[in-house]
Image (cartoon, rainbow, N blue to C red; front, side, top):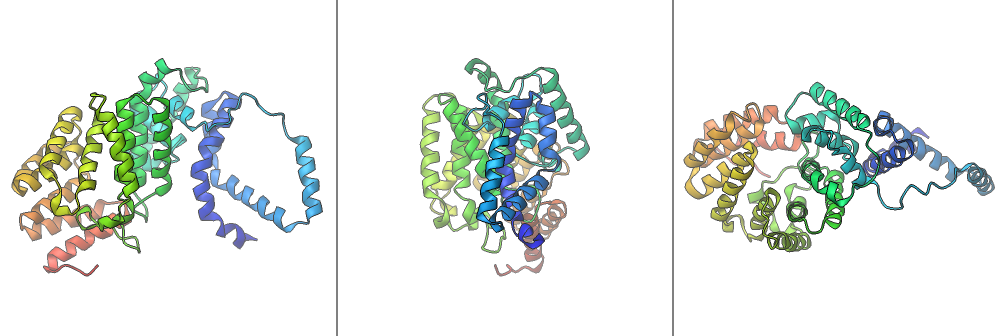
Length: 399
């Protein structure tokens, strides 16, 4: 009996990601208490799903007559249908509720990642570069503010949606990023998260089809996710972009993403997600790494850096600068982002890469090793450790 349930655990964990927001939506709608409903769903979701699986297993081994009697009894006890519960998925309504105007953007994003995305408090803290205890307090306060504001469980009318779109898009962007490049754990990808982010972005796109940035966000997700299969070896090791087998890239997603990007650009309202999508499209269109249009990518990163002031964008601009003007110029750009990202292992990753391009193998190896020591994703840590070992030995290790 125990073995049968344990074998279901991976499937149960996948179901949890899909079902928990829907369960939360129903509870919040019926109770009118979002904070209490969220606590109930988060309290022991794995336990109640295992219990459900157990009951289903029991049903299969009982006799047909007993099964019919149980169903008849359950039907008599079934509560009357709740006409207030719509047939469609409540998940998008949850996203907007978590982005209530009473919340600061950072709190809204954190709450949505937990309630809708199913991320743990630790994972969200990593995404925000803050301690886990700080993030736990932020999420708790956010739930209480939503409750105090008397928020109702409904999809806001169009005029209210426009005010919340920026936070909603940012939530979906972070959710996708965590799925595409997991911040911790044994796997490089969390496909359930990236697929859920794309699904929600499609829902949002259908809800606001004229919003150029929402269209750009969906395009960015598709153009990026198209490379997912080629990012790892069959045994799960990380494969850098320049070394990927481009025949494995999903051309259907590239085509769909490119069409959406063209649609967004035609509206002449350029935003950060459209710029990122344009960069992703340039990578996707290059038949080889050597054929990549780095000057155009550098120009787009320059615009994106000016628009956002995001130090992570500056890190990427440093790499693009090195590819166009040489590694010493790239290192100069890196200096401008280092203070804002102090302690973040990606600074060491970029510095190591640029030093490697400069031929400074010992210094590059040291920074790869430093980055590996702080990386929480096991595939990334293994890749960085391998890079450091290769440079120290002067030989490229076999794949």
